[in-house]
Structure formats: C-alpha cells, structure tokens
Length: 318
Image (cartoon, rainbow, N blue to C red; front, top):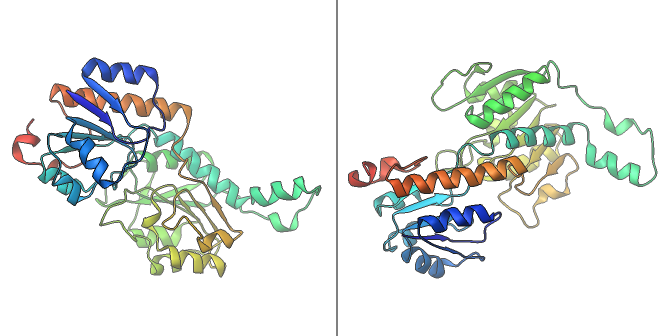
C-alpha cells in the first residue's frame, strides 16, 4: 500500500505521519506539482491526499494504479469527480471539521464590515479618538440573517445568529426544513435578508449562483458575507453594486480574481485570504477526518464519498 500526500501540506503533525506509515509506505511532497508531475505521482500511489492541485479529466483518465483520493478540505471543486468515478477512483472530502470555525468567521467578517473595524483601527493609530460620524452601524438584534445552504455550516451560523437575537431564514436545494430556520426560496432569502451568508459547495450548478439580478434585489442596507468559494458570486456585478452603495458592504473570504481585483479599491469590503476554517480546533479535527477517511478506504469501508454516483458498480460496492 503506497500513500502519497500530493502537495504542500498546510499542517502535518507527527502523529498523522505515524498513522499513515502504519498503513503502508507514505511519502509527502512539499510543493504544488504541475500536471505532468501530479500524473506521475498519482500513478505511483494507491491512495492520494490532495490539498491544492486541480485534477481534471485529462489527468484522471491517464492515472494508473490509484484507487482513492481523500481531499483535505470540505469543498471538492478541485477534482472532476465524474472523471474520477469513470476512472474507478473514489473521492472523499472532510465535511465536518470546520463548521464551527467557519460559522464564527462569518461573524468576524460581519462585525468588521458592519462596525467598520479596519477604518476605526486606522484612525486610532493616527492619533484620533471619539470619532463618530463614519461609524454609524446597524444593530444585529431584530435583523434578518439569510443563509444560502443550510448544511452543517449554515446551521452553525443560524445558532450564532439566534444568539444575537436575529431572525433566521434560509434556502437549500431540497427545500428541506431545518429547525430554527424558516425555509424560503432563494429569491425570497436574498430579497428579505439584512445579512446574507453563503454556504453551498462550488460546482457546475452553483457557479454564479448569486447573479447580477439576485444581487440587485438585496436590501440597500444589506451586508453580504461569503466564506464559501468566490465563484458563487457574479464578481463584476458585486463590484458595481458595492461601488454604487446599493448594498452596505461585504465580507469575502475567497475571490475569483486575486490579483488587481477592483473590489480592493472599495472601503465597504473586508477580505480574508481563505482563513475562515483555520482554527486550532478545526485543524486537529481535519487531521482526524483524514485519518478516518483513509483507514476506511484501507478497510474497504469508504467514508464521505462525494462521487459515489459516478463510480463503476464494483467500486460503489467495495
């Protein structure tokens, strides 16, 4: 059994290495490989752990030997899961480790935007004190939190919002009711929310989910928080709406365009660099989920599979 960590681990504690070495040969690569290098590494492994490297159909069709990939993160848009299934490669994610940390980060961004914390900090460092005019904010109590995607993270956000005294509405693909969240369609959630928070996976069906038309329907004083992938939002339309102050502001943990993004010129946006998940607790829980996934594969009891419907029958039943 050969296990490879394909690309530059963010966190690799000694106990994880020992667990992997007990299962078989374990090799860790500290870079982010190009396509040819990734293909070679994957073809020399039975199990791969993937954190950074996009794996598209052209690579997955040519991979030899590999039967299983465990992604480090919750999202699985790095991998063409249909092509992986067609190649007989099962793909798992880690769905649970970051729910609380991401939910807390939603409110870190929300408070930073709503209370203009970054601008306030700058003024104090410049020697100013008791400056009120630019910092009039809306209290959260009594306002409506809208959640797009009421899974683990969305439900954690709802619990915190209720602690602030907010009304919580939400939408999901199935229309399933969730305790404490009033379920509505996405148009109503976007239109009625004072704070709109996105918690859906990035895939073909969710790309551009928040269209220019939906953005235009938001309340003038609304705030948009996105701790999911940037490509859920029409970024160009968001820039226009924020620049024209048609919504109050946004907190964004991911962007489509990282370099020279025009959103950087706006003072009603707060950015973080994909760190919503990154707490000490979540980091350890992430490692536990990885171990759980990989040991499940070794036992033939696959966990957290995201491409089951694309796998050939003998792999589905493995």
